[in-house]
Length: 112
Image: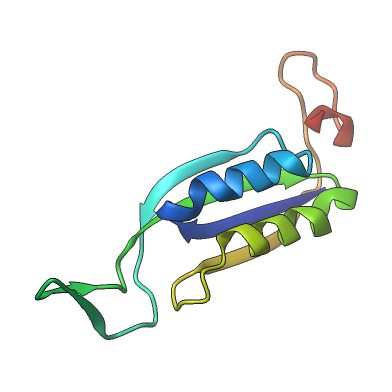
């Protein structure tokens, strides 16, 4: 099993959620987060300067079976991209075990 964590623009959340549902990822957790990025300059909109290094983001935590890793990542990459600095990051790590609390079963079947 893999844990896919991604930080995306809050404005792209709906598109990412729909893309994940289309590839069969129907359960994940998410949080609203704020962070600092690499971009040092701001943008000016209607005469007001805005910092783009601390834009509101959404953090998604997704656990999938190994065979869903590639399609999940591709769905995020395609739906979250704007082509601008600050589109986000994806982190992938290994999950050693998973348990369903209700029944006590363990393993990859608990994700279904």
